[in-house]
Image (cartoon, rainbow, N blue to C red):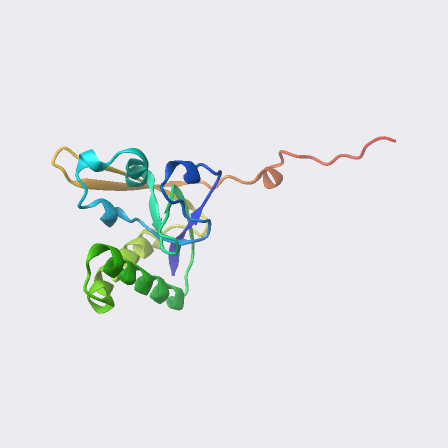
Length: 161
């Protein structure tokens, strides 16, 4: 089974989001966090999280990019419970049992998104509110860049003495 984890190519997430996710946190779309907000409330860092942020399931911070990785059944159960608890604490669900079906749906959505993607594929999200007032979400994949060391930006040569 596959799922998304947060990644960082640079420190910009710490500047553009109210709370930036650390690298390696499990992540869901998080669009539910904006469902009840009026479009005029989407300003500043909230707007950035709405437009391009995944919601992490450890810190509940945001990340611009995620990467497809493997997930165990135990980790999937743990993050589903964590998300259900978040729904209780922040969205008015009466208890974990009542919130768990919604959390399972969010987790399944991301697992389905990842099912056909290779491990390591980078995924980004973009959201907007259309003319009818509906939240629209689109995902795109990006080839993960190699690091400078892997890409051959540096070359070791023997110095003449």
